Picture 1 (cartoon, rainbow, N blue to C red):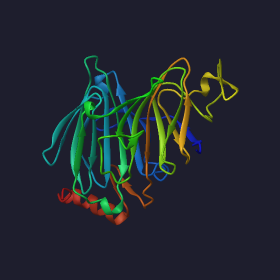
Picture 2: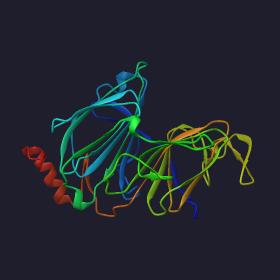
Picture 3: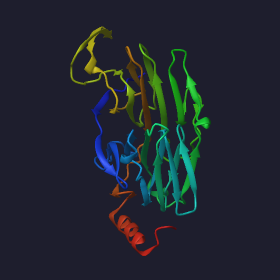
Picture 4: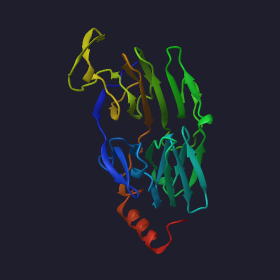
Length: 300
């Protein structure tokens, strides 16, 4: 098997979105071809309701899919087609905006006021840009959990891993979306489709991903592959790791475990014309979408 080397390791940027929601933008709006078919990933987490309660009031989407994964708190959503719903901890919504939809998402914290979730945007190919909108609302209890003998736990949201298939289906980019926990002092090899665009986003704990190039810092008395490593070689909370091509990803945990998203998808490789929540293939298509918004013809 061929190993997937690390291409880049980056940290999110703090931004304000919606009606005043503080969140971390893991990637988005720059170098869209790099993460193709994925366009954007936001990590929204906060213990202060004042920094997220204004939410994301009515706004449009066209030409993309939005994937919302809630860990703590809840998100109430409504749309222009009359759909409503409530996402709670562990739930997922995969929304195919297609030809166009107006919707809103209003977050609410748990009993401690904590709110945490992710939103991923995935592009649609040109022949599906104008499909009818659809939702796949997935309850936490419907997401299969794979538990390995070493204590690793993997929630399979979409795609197939070790024969376990997630509940989200019919997605053009054939994505694999995994929520993975690896316990302390564990070496793990995770197989991935060789050619799909793949990234890991760590949101709890720390791990050494093989061939990590983080700065050198405080030494710890551990070795990996015969070399001494140090604490700052470890990738920790709020770290994006983007991989080159290959068949597997390898990591090692030490005195603490790690939890991360491991996401991959088939690149679409088409031109991108992007303005806010609308992503088309050409400037003419983009201008038509904006015209539709102004003239009341956005919803098809």
